[in-house]
Image (cartoon, rainbow, N blue to C red):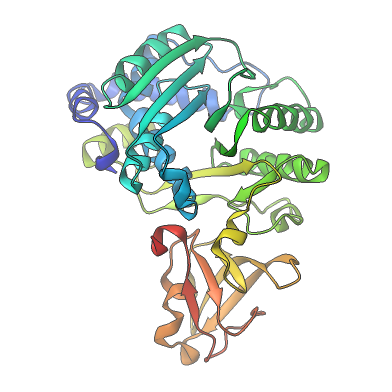
Length: 377
């Protein structure tokens, strides 16, 4: 994760993390504000909250920005352009943009980034502008505006990081789904033809399931194409039971110098969790089409190990584009080297099954190939 954080950001956070009690209190207030289920607006602009955002959330959210766009690797032509127009709505301190830009550079994009930051907090925008102006070949402009915001200009990449959770908090769930769907449809309409809209939300069950509901509404309208993480545009199997939800949990830990602060605030420092949705115009390819591999499945759980077997929850698509969620088990006695992608692959891994779609039990001869974009590049 350190590759996506600037030296100045790290040194500042290290210095201020010595004042752990003060920052931990601000971090608790910040976490409670974002995670509350009530109707009150999120207040995150006080001194304590800003300090917590700058010295903790910024570092964590930089990695989210990088991870959320990783599957754009399946679109190599996206990185061949000379410049990229990037719009960050609800930019805050600019962490999602910072992470996305660093990831784009790491993936091979060498052009100029025309970055437009939009937020309703002037203080946050000033900090974000200062941070991002340090990046080479990045032109930054800012707009102070209450959200939701629909731009006039076209963009190649639009980031909406942890914004839906803050919008329409006084509305019921049905109203929020409709409002947020309208908002995202309007944004997709401002993308350039080959552009992407990336929505990042917390990994909490209610937040993730809300994103699943928004996805269902968008597909019902046939207003957008879902590029990722879904490998299909059918019903989401996670919506069948109230206890299910789909989210990322990547093996990216906070730096060791932030562990004391996380512990003091009662927050995790191991793993990176978030939910995301990548949208584009209906005329454009989806991730599954771009991968062009048969019998695709995505691992949506960690390995569930018990006596004599390993189980994984998957979201699978068959040849006629029928989708379903399923728990597969691999018996220890059937395990072969060609099963390692299934048995050991991290959550989010995309596999292609050599022997067709698998139901319930993985056969001994059932080989899997990891076709995740980051693996293939």
